[in-house]
Image (tube, rainbow, N blue to C red):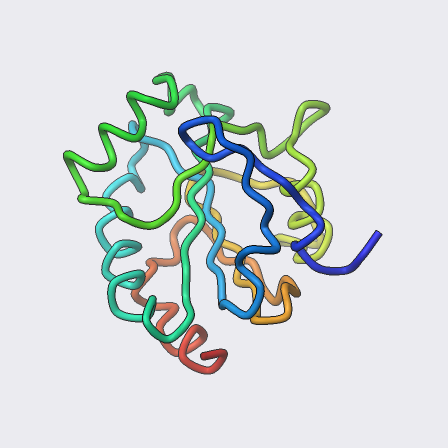
Length: 160
């Protein structure tokens, strides 16, 4: 198994298969999202980051997740609509996934092992946990849900 995210194939929010290798050469911020979370307004800052840096080879990959207090009960179509109407999200959104447990997506198992959380924990603690990935597909760091997207500008710029 390779040591980068490009080995994974995921479903986008419309159900199409997406090879993450299509993001080779880009800096990525991978985020598990939810529509009914106290951190949901972070969609606004995530979109700001995406708009500011996408021409420099930056993208955000949003993965809705319903594992934390059932804060993403909607189906993929409703999630896409919510994100578009409320936050004008234009960065790629993917099908709803589990990020922890037996049914966790392979991508999230990989992310969690590559960038451990607090006290070396591999499990994702809550919605809007962020993983920063460099242009070579290596997971560099994990940021807590309380870390605002705009506070990551310096870390992103250093990789662009």
